[in-house]
Image 1 (cartoon, rainbow, N blue to C red):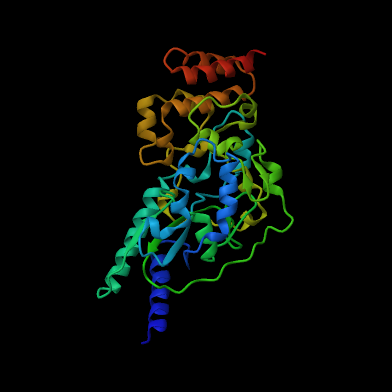
Image 2: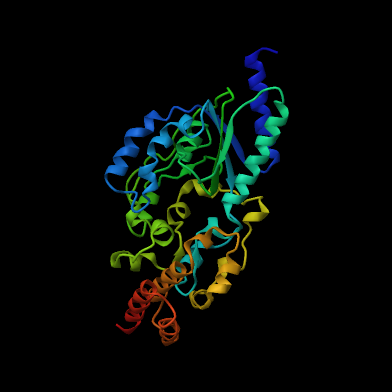
Length: 353
């Protein structure tokens, strides 16, 4: 077998193994990311990354995979659906007494799930190529990697106007992961963009964070504000946050392509601890010890308990006026830090006006 046929065969095997491990799609790309460099640098210069300073600090590694993993020739990109179940998500979002948690975080932390599968895929590849020494490293939202750009190059979809990857047959309810490798695998073709003239994601954004097609100002984004941002949430964004206590899915919920979204087959992504049916009051009453137990193994754990209370306090302030909510808010004033207290007092004020 000549080299070309050999690597075509290996590439096909990788995709078979990937599907066997539960990935919904696998694609291969080269490592040339130069076409994304200008738009990324312009985005950083405008400060749209907010306080995510690592996006600026490590940007050279993002565009030069060989600086992250020497000898890298190709990247294996994978896609794994995460939407947990058929439900009336919009109904939950509109009920201002219920807590809305972004659908990606209702189950087990995706970093652990995808990393484990990628490591297994790498071991299968090493077993197949016993006589060939090669370098590899797995990633999933865990290092300076341009995941969407690489997945787009690998034919897994196209970047939507909300900046997430979109797939014609699966929408956008999925995670991405990568294996950087020094193997000369067969490259897949890039998909065409199918957003057309649609602006649904831009129009629905509660804080107008999608300032133009394919351009997001993280400083305004509810996902950034409730997860990545550690400080006092600006007053102008508190009302638009509504009952979203962790993340935001609005741009995905209205995307026409998500009518093709698939329910996940991954049991680890099934909803845990009734997180899709929590009231704001019950969420606020969770103790710090209970928080650590409930969110052990969850992506939510990393925001910490005080940030959890900060977010819920805002949503309680956005709830229908209620003496019961005022009482619950006051009950936490003495045993929280100044950051949380500030948001509690703001919430109380909303009910007293």
